Amino acid sequence: MSEMMKAKVGIIGGGPSGLLLSQLLDLKGIDNVVLEKHTRNHVLGRIRAGVLEHGFADLMREAQCGARMDAEGELHTGFFINDNGTLHRIDLAGHTGGNSVMVYGQTELTRDLYEARDRMGGRIIHEAQDVAIHGADSDAPALTWRKGDETFRLACEFVIGADGFHGVSRKSIPREVLTEYEKVYPFGWLGVLSRTRPVSPELIYSRTPRGFSLCSLRSQVLSRYYIQVPLSDSVEDWPDEAFWEELKRRLPDEVAGRLETGPSIEKSIAPLRSFVAEPMRWGRLFLAGDAAHIVPPTGARGLNSAASDIHYLYHALCDHYLEGDDRGLETYSDRALARVWKAQRFSWWMTMMLHEFPDHPAYDRRLQQVELDYLLSSDAAQASLAENYVGLPF
Ligand code: APR
Ligand code: PHB
Image 1 (cartoon, rainbow, N blue to C red):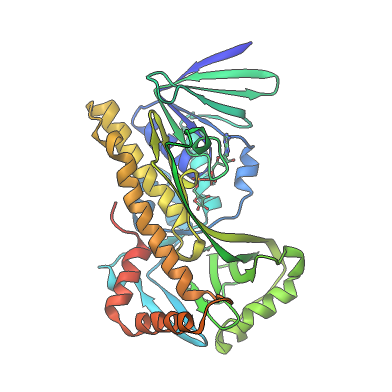
Image 2 (cartoon, rainbow, N blue to C red):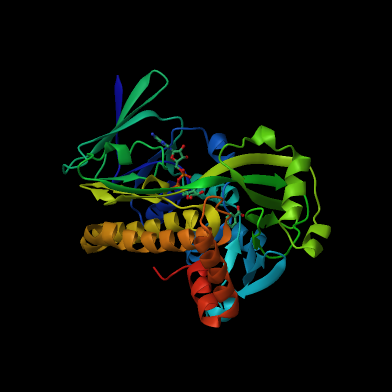
């Protein structure tokens, strides 16, 4: 027996992209259903990035999900770059007419979105197995899935593929329609979350001969640190003591001296890669977020690029349903991709400038150093970095 449901918009994936779109559409009276493969606790167990562009923070407020972010998140008006022992501050606000970024963890943001959907009685179906898309290139698409022994079918007008890199949506688009671009870096980031006071009030991105490191934070009692490691390393190779020792060696002495260490409460290795799939639309299926693109974490663009897709999609669907205007839907893929590629460029540039590339020839190493020297000596170069880091206009 199969149960039949109906909604205007069917959203695959209950990560930040899917939940934010669901909430924004619901506030405009556009009914939708979210299908999520895992349990809510599983989704909330993932530790991800934590730097939000100011435009994304505004979108969270528009979604009526900004209260805890504004109370507990931290506005950062700058960050540091450590060039092999010397700290330089990048003044984000000074270079962007007063803009800043919001430091607030993706896990907390996702929790706020779930709570908002609960308050509004949003339809979110967890543990939806074998989700399949039917008739995406027709006028009457549908989604089917299984939960336990029962099968379900949702008739909808649009399907949003917000199911992350490993989801089913992108794979449902015929191969001859899609072009995929990929770049894989020869290292990963080993990340540690610890209940310790952050070593610096603002983030520190470090370039050292031993490799990259990053000091970040979730709050004044929760720190997030990363070090560049070879892809052949595993978490077992890095007991806490070894991690802290290596991090200290990749920080200026004065910073290392005040680093508070403690047991890790999460430790994982993430490979660095860039990926874009084009176009982001096939018929009535629209891709958003990690389903369509991935960036290395160096420029903190991943979650922000997902939010910019949702910004365009939200306005396109509102124009369709509330104004009878389809131009936003027609131009979604081109507009989203134009911004996505700028985020790709920025993340690539930050990654190439700050990491150690063991196989690079001497010439490339000198160029890498002069790229950083130029940045740290030029107001114009810092203004460009700041403009990208706080978020390009939508
Ligand atoms: N059916 C239903 N849901 C699925 C399926 C499927 N076949 N496959 C994956 N999902 C779910 C995942 O369980 C996950 O909860 O889709 C969700 C996708 O969420 P994310 O991977 O977090 O992707 P997205 O919502 O686009 O979030 C933006 O930017 O760079 C990143 O860290 C950042 O995760 C963040 C992302
Ligand atoms: C994080 O806090 O996890 C973080 C911050 C900035 C980055 C990447 C990750 O560029």
